[in-house]
Image 1 (cartoon, rainbow, N blue to C red):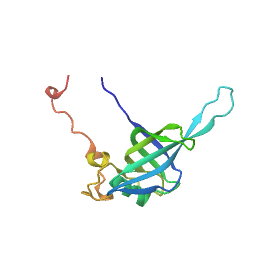
Image 2 (image 1 turned 60 degrees about the vertical axis):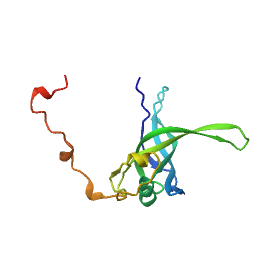
Image 3 (image 1 turned 30 degrees about the horizontal axis):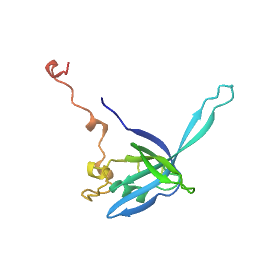
Amino acid sequence: MASLNRISLIGNVGRDPEIKDFQGNKVASFSLAVNEKVIRSDGYPPEEKVLWFRVTFWGNTADIVEKFVKKGSQVYIDGKLSTSDFLDKEGRSRTSLEVRGQTLTLLGTGGLGGAYSPTQQEQNGYNTNSKPLYDQTSKTDDAQMEQPPIDNESELPF
């Protein structure tokens, strides 16, 4: 049976990213506020609820976060949920959900409007430094991304 662990969020960065280096692998972490409208059943106008997420990026994407993401930046994040266990101040065991970012898109007027997707090695926490951090000239047009039409019916999968 197949399974999927995927989360997509659009929100505002709650604090400047914290950057750490673990044996040559950079990690960037920050909080992300996602606004959600809650429809009330009592006829009153909808309320706005804020959900907070802890987000981390590794490798070259952490370099992008360090350079371009600041408190208040609007971002689109695609990634997966992971858990971490820790002890609170009273010594009780707790579990925390964290979004491990895989794709970062800067939104809003202050952003560069580009997406950055790490390589498979970077997703696993390894920094290869084998490609430029961010290259706006490598953006592709929608026309380039379109798939060529199927020429004959023999190529149809059914």
